[in-house]
Length: 525
Image (tube, rainbow, N blue to C red; front, side, top):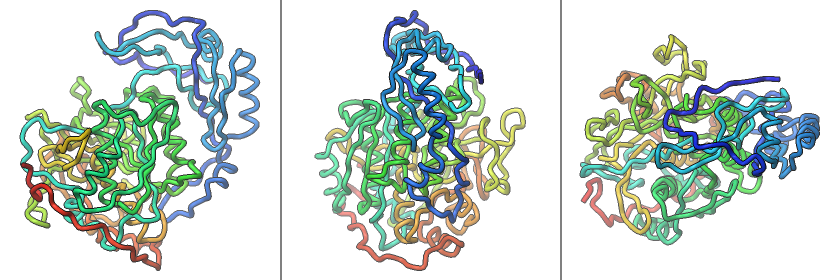
């Protein structure tokens, strides 16, 4: 048996009492790959989802053995997905204790937080085929990385204006691509989207929602700001793409199942996944983090680029110990981690772009730093990533950046109101739209584009050399505040074409419509 232990639950978690031993609990067993997935790198040969499932999905022998194990402990099978490597089971609290060695209880986040089911120790893994047992701990694992300005913004932009400032490739609109958006709460209203895109003078994209683990498009709460920001930023910049929003629960179980379902979705077939939710790397249960990483590995192996917000609380990522922390899943080496800048402009030209750090005014700062979990990848070997905690040579965060300061934020519409929002939550969908347009022009998916992006270097990015996010300072080249910098889309497309993965054909679709101002261009009123 592989027994893993978790450090104590977060300090703000309060134990209330034991859970009813006869209550029913649904869990997800995440299983190992049948064979080692191919290492994703640009340019990569994209494997069909069906072929990938056959070669790298769950091993049938593992599944049958675990079915026998679950029946022995009185559990009922709910469903099984060989491609996603999941076996979903239902059983009593007592049966979960017998199978996985956990004592389940009722907990609450803080003195007045919502109650949830949890356990103070990691589940015992009774079989080497199991990567994780998810669902025994229902505590929230992530927060949405968007920011409302606390003071009057000095500038604000429509996504179309930022697309011009960042020189997104001309004659592209994301046609032929599908952008998946993962949401752990909130919702959108189609009437708001129609009004917003009409105000921009463009035809909005097709947006559909998918329910995962009981999550649903449920507008009416604060998380609507996240959902609307994601859809409106990416939708304005890639209106020709198809958008699919996967709504799930804010648990490691829901997060894993949403990413896995999107990656292996044979109906919608996403080519880009945008994630604007996360939490401090060391706040995750190791099994949950390992499970998500395996789903992200599946995504990039299938040719999907995953863009992830790097966090909005500076070098500490909101932790109170004063030490550096990075946000997960942005710290995963499988994703394109997106940091934040403060941008001002005059007309169609950028006047200034520095690291986003408004800590002094309570308006947040970009996340960034060095992972304590994931080792330094080969594609960052020449990036002068600083040593992490205890000298660990870890993966540097972020990879890229874009405007995120709420004081130079994005003009969007949320629940019937026109507002200005910022946060690295806006940068993940901005980069998702850019990747969709690059894919369209290249005639292939970027997938895991780290190697190509880091090789492109200064030519394809606006290097951010001023400012910092606390412990880390901007510098020439990559830094732990804004990564390689903000994009020059046209130069990046040229660099990718000149690399060995460049396509010979370049489709010429109709470009997105021009912005029809309903508010002052570049200035917040």
